[in-house]
Each structure stands twice: as structure tokens, then as C-alpha cells.
Image (cartoon, rainbow, N blue to C red; front, side, top):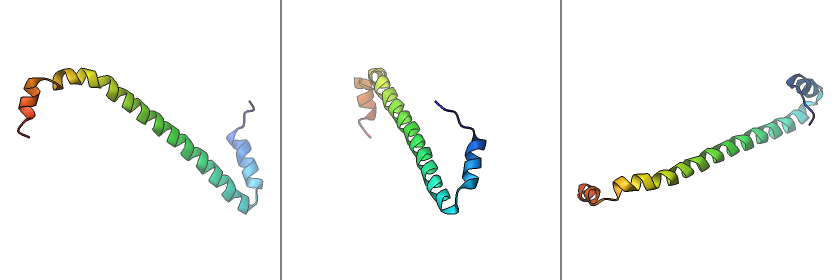
Length: 74
């Protein structure tokens, strides 16, 4: 895979006409938002995994007659 530096990108950007800069900006924004969305989706997936993993452990404490009695009046 070819590597590109920020300086090379900047040089190319400086040569573009103004109307093309908007296209570049839209594309870079899309890439950035897509990356952020993927990161958020990964975090949400891990959160759900933790919830399911802890459910059985918490259930041992919560699913007892003493707990039902303690919360019955609420």
C-alpha cells in the first residue's frame, strides 16, 4: 500500500480550485464520521456483551426471595 504524508496532501489541496475544495471537505467529513460511527458501534457492542456477561452474576443476588420482599413495597 502506498503511503502519503500530510504535506503531500496539503500540496495537492493548494493546487485545487476553490469549488473542488468543498468536494474534498465533504469526503473527508464523511470518512471521519464513518470512522466515529464504527468506534461508537464497537463500544455499544462491548457494552451489550458486558451486560449479558454480568446478568448471571447479578441474578444470583437479585433473584432471591429476600430481595423480592425488600422491593415489594416500591
